[in-house]
Each structure stands twice: as structure tokens, then as C-alpha cells.
Image (cartoon, rainbow, N blue to C red; front, side, top):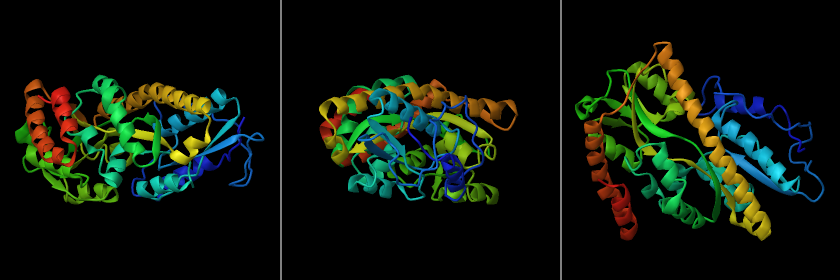
Length: 358
């Protein structure tokens, strides 16, 4: 059984409170898997079985009990079981560095494995945004069939390979939704004049502009104060992000647009991958993919529980677009596809239009 310092969970929570995306306590939808027994061995000392392969995973920021915490524990246990102690997956302490620095660590060999959002990979490389254009996927069934399977998944892996990364798994982030403190958004007219904090990515800003909203540039750390001061009326983000930022109940009107899906990719460096035998490469990928698939239900149940709890205590109202509204949203989104599509291979965009367009 591998050994790790028990205080890591406390350190992770403290780091979360000191970062831009920090939040209060996070409640799990169900108990997390039991962690492996740990010791107080000095940081950096190899406490693995003799001759075990050490794989260092550098995570981003996450909180105890969250879906990512649940994912990492399940992954650690599954890898140990599959390799029977021959591979020691070491979850490194959380760091407040940005995603670009995390990718650099993996490419430089400081970390062997990373797990960050595909949206961040796109910001770094500029070659992945085609995979999560607005209104490309309808629901989680659509995501599972295409984003995690089929040709889209293969192309995502190819894009990451161009960065020197081998995609061995994934974890859930969820669909991006919209919330505000003015009124429910049930048609295109309801967007008019609504000031929304939107990440400054062209396909997000252009989508909301096409819908009639007013996108505003703010950092995550400024969202809560922006809502209080009236700088913004709401924001675009994942449900779990609303909760982590402490703003879930500050913006009582949530519309489940499901307008953009983007997951996290679990990757290992090409150097680490090449250091493994073909048999161990196959075993690692098989194990990581199995954990990835099994953890989707936990993350989605967690998200739904957040909504159910907030609705039951009367702090939010949740609305869902009808078919007429969905059609208008799709039309607005496809105007963005035309602009964004110029960045990518024309054959690739033709296939996207064929498989996911109107």
C-alpha cells in the first residue's frame, strides 16, 4: 500500500482558500473512496516498493470531497491494484500555479501526469476549440457518445499529442450554464441588457453577444463582489464553479442552457509514456479510462445534488429551454461557428457541421 502524508487534504483546503477560485466547504454527493494508508515520510522521498515505477501527478486546485478529489482517490487505488504495486502514482501537493505552468511541468518532466481542462489546453495551444463550440452537444448522452467516444475523442487525443502529451483518461467538468439575479432567461429577449461575467474567449463572448447579453471581463475572484456591487448581473460557468465561488445563491435564476461542454483531459508526458513497456502502456491507459468512465456518474450526481439542495431551500430557481428557445440558441451559436471555423481545418469543420449542425 503506498504511503502519503495525511495532512495533504488540509493543505489542499488551505491552498483553495488562497487562490482565485477558492471557495467554502465542499460537500460530496456520497462518501469518497477510502484513501490508502499514509505515513509522514519527507516530501520527495520515494516510499514505494523497491524498483516501482513512480508516476507524479500534478493536479490543479480542487477541494476535499469534490468530484476531482473523488476521482484522484479512485485513480490512485485503481492504478495500485492494476499494477500490483509496480507503479506508484503519487498525487503531488496542489500548487497555485496556472494551467500553462502545469502543462510546462509535464512537458519538462517535473510532473509525469496532469489533469486540466481542455479549455485551458486550447488557450495554451489554440488547436482544440473546435471540440467544444457553443451548442455542439445537446446533453450528457451526446457528450458520452461523441466527446468521450468516436472521432471527436480521437481528434482531441491527436491535438494533445501535438503538444507532447498522451491522453490516457478524462474527468468531468460539466456543461456551462448561465445565472443572474434579474429574472429567469427563457427566451432570447430575456438576455437583453443582462451583464454577464464571461471568460474572455472569443467563442464565449461572441455567443453571448449574439444572444443579446453584455459580456463583462472579470477574474473569478471578482465575481462575488461584482454581483454585490452591480458590476455584473450574473455569470457563465459550471454549476460546481458557481458553488465553489460562493455565488450559487447570489444569482437565484439559473438557466440550464447546456450551451458548451468541455471536460478535463488526464495526460502523461511523452517521455514518461516512452519509458513504459507496451504492456504497461496498455494497462495504464485501460485503468485510467475505466476510472474516468466510472467517475462520470459521481460528478453528475454531485452537480444535481447542488441544484436540488439550493432549489429545496428556496434560494434558486432553475429553468430549462424549450424547443423554440433551443433552436434560437443553436442559430446564434452557428454564427459563432462560422467565425471560429476559420481557425481550423476546413474538412474538420465540414464534419462538425454535418454531425452537429442544424
